[in-house]
Image 1 (cartoon, rainbow, N blue to C red):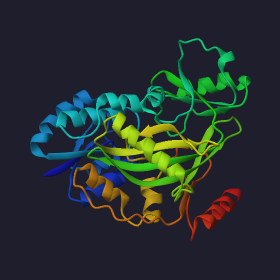
Image 2 (image 1 turned 135 degrees about the vertical axis):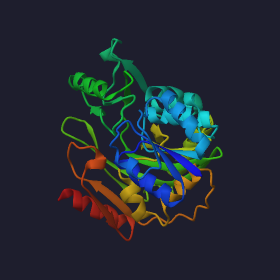
Image 3 (image 1 turned 90 degrees about the vertical axis):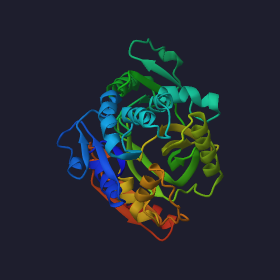
Image 4 (image 1 turned 45 degrees about the vertical axis):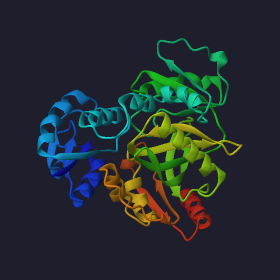
Length: 358
């Protein structure tokens, strides 16, 4: 029987598991929480950490005799991305290498490699707790962020002056799980997200999203929503994003995977790479935004592609749509949200701003 591995069986993985089962795949779900809700609908459950591939491989070894495992599904960033690479290597599935995964999920390594591969990115340098920081070398404004965090924009602070630095460093170190933080030059611009898949080493672009971000009264970055189609969908910026994404695919030898990337557009309309995700994405995009905005089932298409089925992607039509998150300390997937639709992007922007002002 055809099967897929789902890394994680929590609430955010439930739509992935249920959709894959609708398509006829058996699901081997992995989660260290024995009460994970996705286990209730999975065919096989492995109560193991998604951070450690070694015991998983031992369990998958026996299940591979029972199932024809065709692919790996993952919505989690960080260590599970590396786990996916290790499982793919064991199963001889075309994916990406463990080395590439490590370099992408550890943002300080990714930033170091951008220059080598000709990918525009902010000037930055990495710091550990054991290193002494020469505060005189820092130019303001700047951005302090964790190299590897598990929750969205946690730990990111925009600084305007030195007296805010110690708090920002502490916030970033508290949020990182690899002991590194990054100090970036601040780019005055706005943020976009690029959504795509990779199959056979070829990029399959889906869309650009405009990120709606804000800073709280302590300078910490807060994600407030997304809007699509991006105002840059048909511009030179989109062409530059595609070029950077293709360089990422080639440089890191990605054969099959989701690929999402965040960019900040500077005053010269150059998109600078901020981060890359080799997972299917969170922030309620799959659950709330894409079903309203896209003219086809993004999740079904992605699952079939990641299973190596080579589905035919229709011509993409995007209805102007935004998702806005309520303010609060909860992670985005737990926040109340509002989906807004409009006849065109101009009307959508008006509705977004009027709604956020209320």
